[in-house]
Structure formats: C-alpha cells, structure tokens
Length: 464
Image (cartoon, rainbow, N blue to C red):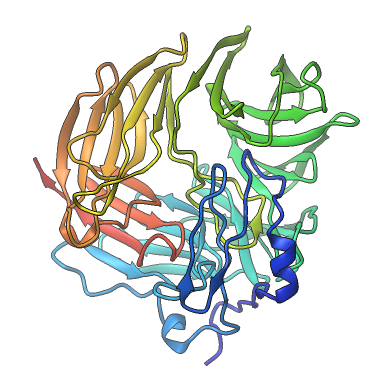
C-alpha cells in the first residue's frame, strides 16, 4: 500500500551517521547528544538540558500505521485518535511541530501532514498532505484563523506554505532559505515563530519576516558582523533575539519590531554559555546556565529589571526527536505578568516507581521565589496556561495506576485547587504534550510516539 500523505523517507541511521551524531551541536539554548536505539532495545540517557533520540528506523511504514489517524470508538463524549508510530522505534513518525485549537476543531501539524478533527465527534474534518515529502515545521499559533507550515525533502526543509485553519486549503507557497544539518543523517528545519500577522523564520544567523496573509517577504535581518543568532522568540508586538558577538561586553538582547524589522531595544546580556534560551518575548525572560546554575534575566523597556539564580529546574525540550535540528523548542514553564513558573527536575518515587516534579513560582520584578507546590498528588505536572489567577496545570498521572487531574495553583500562594478529574485511561498522555483546556474539557496532543499513544485525546472531566 502506498503512503496517502506522499511522505518521503527521513534520513536513516547509518554507521557513519553514528560517529557524526555523537558530537554536541549548536542548539536553541541547549547541548544535545544523540542517543542510540538498536532494534527494539531503547537506551535513554539525558545530557545537559535535553534529550535527543537516535533510533533504528524502518525504511517503510507498515500498512497498519498508514491507516492510523481515524477516531476510535468514542466512550460517552470522549474520543481519541491513534498516533502514527506508537509502539514502534521510529519516534519521528507522527511527530508534531504544532497543535492548534479553533472553535470547532483541533489541528495537528505533524510530519505526515496537517490534520484537523471535529471537537464534537473526533471525525476528521480535513487532511492536508504537504506539497513536498513531509512537513518539517509549523507556526506555534494561528492568527485570525490562519497558520503556516514548512515542508521539504529528506535532505532540506526549504519551503513555507500558508494554510486556512477552517478548510485546510493551502493559500500560498514560497521558497525560504535553508542550511544543512550538522550530521549527515540529520535534517535542519527553520525556527518558526509568529506574531502580529507575521511569520518570523530563523535560519543561518538571519531572521526573516513573511506576511501570514500572502507569504510576501516583509524584511530580513542578518546578525551584525562577527555575531551569531543564539536564539529567538516572538510575542505580541515584538521579536526578541539573543545575539552572540563572542564577548560578554558585546553580547546583547535585541528587541525587534515584527512588522518593520527595526531594533526597538538593545540590552547587554554578558556571558552567553552553551546552554541559553529566550524563554519569553513578552515579558522578556532570558535563561542561561552559568557555572552549573540556572540564571534568569528579566528585561523591560528601560533595561534589566532583575537577575536571579535557581536550583535544578526542568528545561528539557518536550518536542525533541531524532535528527531534527533548529525546531522551536517547547519546555515545561509558563510566564504571565510578573510571574515565572518553572518545575523542578523529575524525581523517581521509590514507593510507586513513578516520577514526580513540583511547581515553582518566581517574582520577575525581584527575582524572589514565591512558593513551591506539588499540587494535589506526587506526579508530573504539565502546564496548560497562566493567567491573573495563577497556573492551570494537568497532573498527568502514572499510566494504569494514577488518574490525571486538572488543578489550579494560586498565583500568590501556590495553594492547589482540584478543578476536575479525568478518566484513568488517559493517564500519561499529557506528560510531554501540548495540552488545551476549554470549559472543563481537556485536549492532549503528545509531541511524538516517544511520549504517548494517542495523537489527540478529547477528554470531558468530572468537576470536583
């Protein structure tokens, strides 16, 4: 059976690639080391702030996997969709680059195409295969019902397409700059950000802005001479770039207007170690690991507001997979107003054999830690969103043993209030996933088959 998505094979794990892939690479705020998976034996190691998967990948998908993507039989008002690659060793199969929620659908922009599912039933609303061999990036959010995704071949990710979220129709296609991966078996993808109706593309020390409406190029901003673009992020009304000029005296944080490319602010940042990231563009929060400590710096219009260190916190990438470099990384944190929410590194529980973490809240004005909370049970917390009231989080639960819960943590005190309970069968699906919540309904979309079995789970909750 042929592949209905028109997908090409991604780079295979060759003996030559093994040697190349072991070397650390320049990454978005982290050191990444390839991990070796031989046949069905998976050996997982952690290096620095993140994990990079290396797998023995099948050359073709099985007929069973090709049929995945249709909704399973709903239970009451709940439904789920099988995830391509679940149960296998190729964790790039079915991997998602973004997930979008509209009034009527939930949309998954994944390697094989962009797929939309009806919220009421789980039936597939539309499916858009990539014009090339596969999807290799997507904007994190929609703007006025429109998004964009990158696509290319097994060698390069060099095109961008606009998509209408209501119909799945591709509205425009353009070619974009690209560069080769740092390993022979790798794929370099563009870092895609979006704000104010603009798509910001990060490639090869250059930020380029394209209009989301028609794909027209608005501006291009290469880094200054002898400087490199270490990381970038976008938020309402601004793009923030971390500019490394090789000297603590010259390194800076640039604030760029998304529609004009003009520099609206330029702040000195000092040392830029190997592990660094722009966690948030509005408010501006920069993370660096210096001398084994995590340092967070908060800037406002007038310059630096605060700088503080923390203990060990979890900044592992949630969406990292084999041989994909440059993707906009998703981490376990949230920012709202003058609050920065982090989590502690995961801890093994001797009694249950599971893992847990706790939530941490910091005041960005002073750098003071406000509270630490383990919510209502000893499990992993996945942040959904932060607002004026505090932090909405999913206690993801231990698969087959601890049911998930929807919990709100008070912004001022960290006191946990259980909002709702979820069925036990959905435990674990939200541990490394994009999680939405709307009117008590929880929607989980794991980033890849390494982290879940369902591409989408739509879960009605029982109010506490």
